[in-house]
Length: 222
Image 1 (cartoon, rainbow, N blue to C red):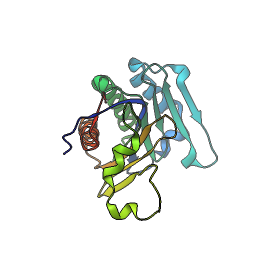
Image 2 (tube, rainbow, N blue to C red; image 1 turned 180 degrees about the vertical axis):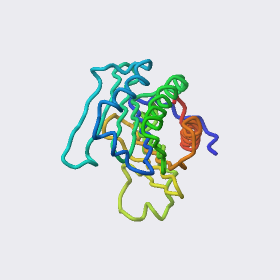
Image 3 (cartoon, rainbow, N blue to C red; image 1 turned 90 degrees about the vertical axis):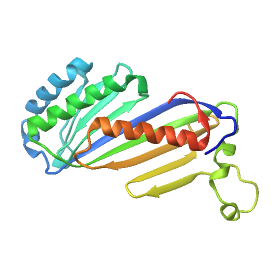
């Protein structure tokens, strides 16, 4: 583990996306959409989801149909249900808001499962964030991640080097961000079993994020 002085950072933008894939498609809901919308809105309204944030997408292909509920108050949340899966996207979430966000997520997921008698076949959590390095050139952060052999692949001085690491059920990408100056783009994807709770998924995500920061020797608010 790195022991030198840590590199100061900030995260100008981050996004988490949770996806639960249904064991069986919830086709019934999309023949009478007012029923799942009413159930979802009742569950999510206490968490700041208004009626004017509801959008219904009707398509010729059933698999492309969707119901979306959006909350625009910080942090913005989009709750999306299709016949095949359920997804929740949260922008710029702060770990200090974990309990409130988990409350909203559990309320929405619980409403869908109860109304549809649905079960998940699998779950997935994705974290994507732009990490801005405040004092150190970003290439210095990732330079130790590659072996000497890797640098022999191209002649000349390296402008930046990233890494992709995949293990069973989890992968991480660290690349240059084009959205913010002197920033890294970090994307972490982890699969979860169907019976893993949202609390357990959140705890795993936090542990993964902390570990990545420790390995890269970064210091800043998550």
